[in-house]
Amino acid sequence: MNAVTVENVSKRYRKGRTGYHTLREDIYNLTGRLISLGGDKRRDTDAEHIWALQNVSFQIEQGERVGVIGRNGSGKTTLLRLMAGITRPTHGKIMVRGRLGVLIEIMAGFHPELTGRENIYLNGAIMGMSQKEIKRKFDEIVAFAELEDFIDTPIKRFSSGMHVRLGFAVAAHLDPDILLIDEVLAVGDAAFQKKCLGKMEDAAQEGRTVVFVSHNMASVINLCPRAILLVAGKKYSDGPSSDIIAEYIETAGTGQGERIWSDPKTAPGNEKIRLHSVRIVSDGQVTSEVDIQKDVYIEIEFWNFKPGALIHTSIHLLDKMGYGVLASANMHSANLIRDEWFSKPHPVGLYRTVCTLPGNLLNEGRYSINAIVLTDIMDIEVFAAEAISFTVHDSGAMRKEYGGGWLGVVRPKLAWRTEYLEPLVDSQQKGNK
Image (cartoon, rainbow, N blue to C red; front, side, top):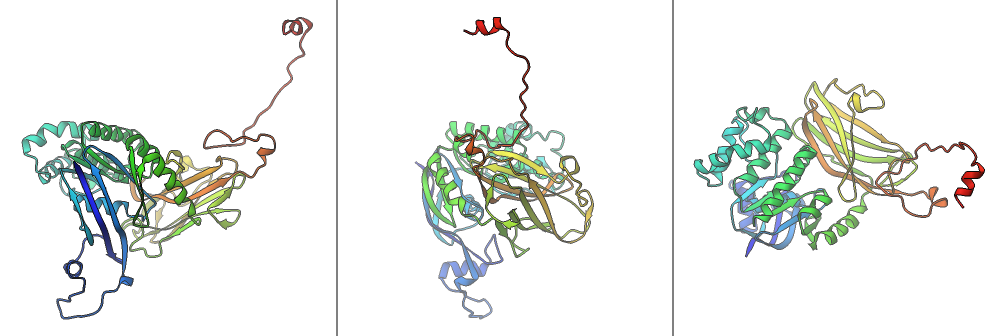
């Protein structure tokens, strides 16, 4: 039996606007033409819209674990929002059988003024559970989220990581038939991510359906036997995870070394911080192809809209399978030089921060960058997963002495030295014969 059926689904948004439709847009979607309540008969053209999804179809059987992968902007989160019933398709239909556990956005389903305890009961009631059922699960949810000391605190005071821990715990423990999880887990720490993956595996073994959106290919392979690849809002391929991930890596290798968000209203981030651009610079040029011996400069530009904000920036460097290679930040304790803006109040304006990866550090291969901007050290304002990618190419200098490939994701030049200690005496030479 199918838990989820998606038939020829398309989703269109008006440019400069995301999320829910206005009444006028809903009427337009039903009739195919714009009907103005005030008598305005202006035409609504395709040039004013963007298609987030186009003619996507697939089925997911009960108890199946499916990963949804693709670059930023490919339509992954839009698809999950449609499956969750948060918004409606412009065309096509989605049929979902069973109770949903959903974690798509950090604050989705939470009321900021209510405490963690009150939000657990609120979410359970929304899912149709009785107070007795929720009470039976309550201690397990709080323990999993590791929020025993904060459960009676209004969640508007929670950090991003605390929101994620509570959100996942609620979504996974209130007996959902279908678990929809987005890349929001990426803001949690590594130990919690591992615990979440274990919980999703347990849910699948219990016959629950799991749909998992992630940029971490290793997690997708470990959790999901099947994957769906979205490219530019269309279903590109659907099949065994290992095969689909190989296609994803191939299609992801077409970047130009720079991504720019020109409109601060729609760029990644929130009302405090918005991302303007992320780029790779090497040898004085913006590029996605890097010589293994050359320094790589990762430039992140962002707008600050909050006067006096204490801002710091961070990156995650991932290999082609989504494994973390390293993380870095501009905080003093992690910086080889001193960044004068770290821990200093930032006036409103546009900023650029640059991280340098030295030459002869990374091995040849494909890498991607998560760009992160935080305030007050802990609060994530921008998390742009796989914001940009680049390829490191072997220059061939080492190939002259060793023709094979080098093991690992890093290939630094390290200091080696050999010393001649002493000659062998006659008895040692005879013993070796």
